[in-house]
Amino acid sequence: MPQRASTLRLCNVVGPDTEELKPYVRCPRRDETINALTCTGCSRMRSMEWAPRKGGVVICSVEEPEPTTDPRADLAEAAARVLLHEVLTPVTTCVTPDVSIEQLRRLMANEGLRSVPVVDLEGKLQGLVSRTDLTTAADFGLVENMMTSRVHALPEDAPVAYAIALMAFENVSEVPVVTADGTVAGMYHALDALRWVAGKMGYVNPMKKVATNDGEPAVES
Image 1 (tube, rainbow, N blue to C red):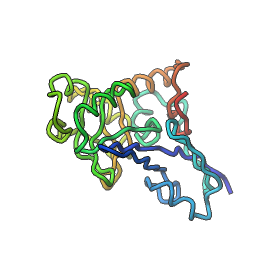
Image 2: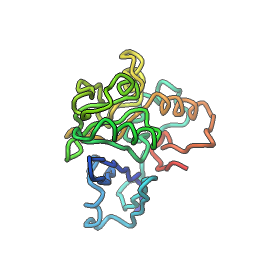
Image 3: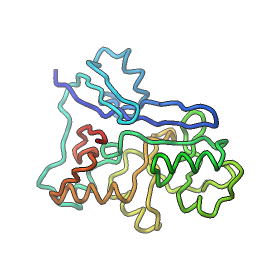
Image 4: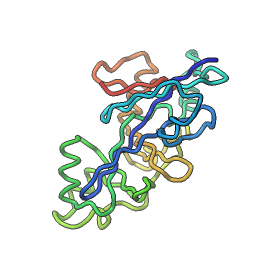
């Protein structure tokens, strides 16, 4: 039986006093994102490995090989066929609404984050905070008092073309990507889109590996 490597993504949820790593993987049998820990009870799983800052890979047996995008497809066709869950970076940092603005500033500076999704304890999207938001925020208070609660988000099964069009027409530089129940699956940035386009044009970024356009797992170097 063929085996498939699926990217294990990590959502690091930061609270006022705690951090929790939530592992997710796209189940090839169910064709949906699930908690990766449930894979340990599945007879199809062959191996699982991950690192806190790099994500990981789950190898499982499947009935059919993984479909790939036709390499002859032009850019527009590829953008319409490749889905967001195939190209998301493997690690996303989120915060809960009760995190202080001061703590958020330190977190974004230390991690070099452009934006941070705000989630509840179950990982469901509540809002978004960007670097621009922080420039006008007070030096005290909580994230829930200054986050953007009306967020342009996309489902993980949306094509890359939707994300590119949404960022262009709504004048935003990032899009939260969510599962069917609203759980944050990752963030898709304008820079991610540029890297993807450059990859389709044959250019390679030697400093940073990202998920390939056919869904092959990759991790940050």
